[in-house]
Length: 88
Length: 427
Image (tube, chains in turn red, blue):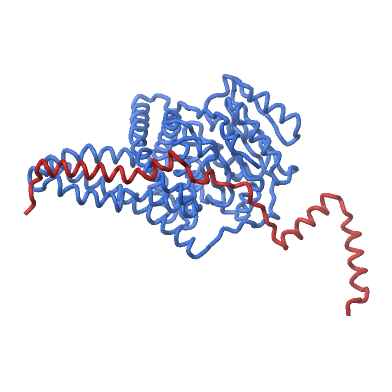
């Protein structure tokens, strides 16, 4: 059996809904009046990290850009290979 | 008889809305799950991959903000010998052309293109196409004139193009002038939900990640294949997104590639901007919906998400319809069997569980950003949602009228930027 609403029920509903809306909006109104949020989001402080293996690739790029003689580098590398290992 | 028809219609509308609301929950829970697993986006990727790039900056009467972005472009860490910046002065009547020309003379990699009154003023897509003709980079990036990116944003975005299946890459947009007023604060919340949750979840689930038309890039070869930007569509970014997916490529979202934007500062400007977005999105829905469903390049879940995304701006119109149908239905039904008091209970429950899904999404986005205090403003988003109902309905009516009478439906309402965001830049 569903009861029929009386005038008092309507008044209570309106009051209840109004209170609910007020309570729901209260934090928003407080934040608007006295903002404590730290916004806008800071995005500038982030640094860009390069991975070690990528750094090697970048060095090769720099060598190419600066015009190093690749043949000369290879010759020096070949000489270094036959040199005795001084760390032993 | 009328009651049965109304009931059926109401049921269909509610089901459609529920589908969208479930979608919101799936996205939010996906991002939360990822966060719990502490899956962090890799900041440094394959930075060895540094193709030549062209950055297009369309600008129409942007004298208050153009210098800010051009100066920032000179500070980017991407190798300047691989970078070309093209400012498209779209028939500006203020000092935009003068400022662009000054930078063009000072920096060899900056080029200014000037469009006259006959060529210019036809919208962003038209300006971008004009710039594209002069672009020679392998990757074509787009930045709006009011934007302000991180210095290393290009490295973060470009690394995704190592995958040959990636056609477009999109970065995150953050509101710069957020503390200015209530509108900018609410737009900032919308952006948090849209990028921190929506885009991230779509990318994570392998669904349809959306290109926002700015803070993103597209492969030059792909753009050429697609014939550039479609100038008849107001939402050229959404159009490009779907064209890219239909061509068999993907759009990737890079969450840690961030860029500031200057949000609209008033309700009228918000209306103009969202009206353009809604109308453009609806144009895309008419253009791509069938193609998406028939496409052999998309999986079922991609098709489902694509269809829902394409039609997302119809949702506020559906809400209006459901209200129009729901009220007489409520009155008819209440006299028959149910009292208003009792019918309001399931309606309220539905509102709590379902209707608040987008707000839940924004709340989680703010939480993930560490913005717990900003969450206090979430209830105010209901006004944004209600405001979107007349905006989208107006856009749909105008679009239908223009289709019936074959009028030009493309009237580009440009967003005016005040340059107020300058005061928030500290670095």
